[in-house]
Length: 623
Image (tube, rainbow, N blue to C red; front, side, top):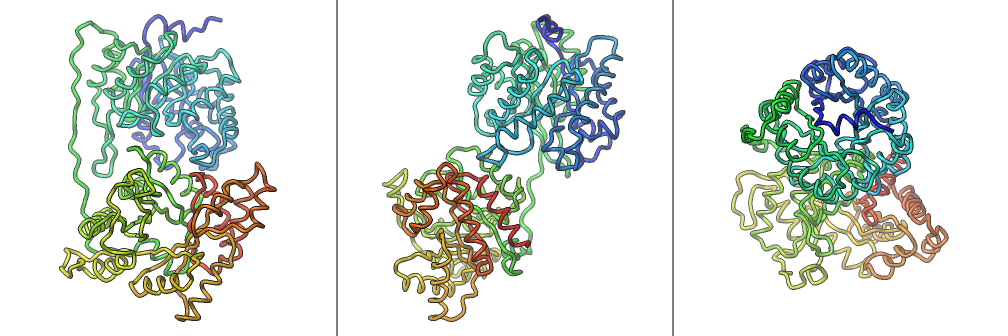
């Protein structure tokens, strides 16, 4: 069957529209509301944006339905309005298109669901497919000309979305568009070639790049993708108006309409069939692109990048308040923490995705490990800073003493404090002999108790290790390690007493699976030294299956899994992860009134399981 949209696309390049959200916000729509719901409450406002893009020369206008899926709308109490919001979005765009004096196509805009797929998140593939099916069905019922899946950062999520659409309509034209970060890869670490290889196998008509950064980098991604796409697939490019900068509390996009006009012809010469704009672009940008496409010659003017200056960040405050973790422990609030491993590469997108899942579940704080098992990883300082600045969630920096001399230790402490990373978990660290570089430096100038004392009695008092003043006292909260399963109980008791005398603020334990180690240790400590009032965060490592339980019991020092629990995991079979969570919940229900919080170690980075456990614990504490 001949499709009019695809026929036109074969004849000449088509011009898309620009940003919808940018325009709605500029015309008074609140940034905290669901812009898609304006289809119901302010349809004329939405129509005015469509009309301006048509007047600017757009051949395609996208419906105001980018976030009109059940998961996103549910956050605004509109989960039951999915079909209505999408149908009305098409109706508004269709009326504007019909009123134009030329042919204008209506594209049904579908964005990501706003929740991360498991295992980074808790959204299962079948639930994601159901959400996409619901939205796409409404768009198809209202008769869009083409479906545009745009601004996807997760390649797997885009695949699910496309397959859901194809199951509903085998013939509707589909455009599948990914977004790339400033480093030229997707937020989850896929390169353009990998994206093209997968999308080229799907039943799509158009593959493209949208949002991302400015035209120059989008053009580079397009060129890299085109080398790996089948020749019968069209290409789309809809970049942002440059890399956004925050100026005076506002998000500004530097790329001018004239700059976009120059690039329109460049994109077409590179083989792009649909050009347009995304965040920060306006009808003025589209008008310049229209003019460029209508007057294209072989000697287009060179493209230059416009730059803007950004004010440097302000310095840390003179008066430093206690951390949120410190305040929660002081108030006796139950604390939940989850261990996060830094990435092996330079992208933190997967880490931030996992943190978002935990944050939505109600986690109090996240621990960022430092070279766990002596493996080469990104510096945890950077990960902590990005989590706190981009996610607004406080972190605990794991701070091993092994491999650091006194100069490095003190410099690292100052750097952490300057980045507002002020919760520390002081440990000895894993020996380099077991890791990636067994020949690496493995010595240390101070042990963990010495580092605790250095921080609490030195830096927090305004002096360094040598007693010389530093420019400003720090305000670190310091945690230490506690092994409740240490076979040498006397040694562990003495070590904890020494850490307390050094000023430790809290301790985090090795994983336990019954209440007995905690109660045995507390009783022994109080018999020898008196009441143990120090906040204790008990570590919980949910069992994943029987093999996991046996490995921990037999090969990880300090962890004991009883025969009874191993038998439970054996009976669970393929439901081992469920049974492991049940065991953890039972333990926490028994000891929750005896501890200050928990420290979850997600098995095999299954952060969705950690999120479930956090919700269960929060429900326990609220009951």
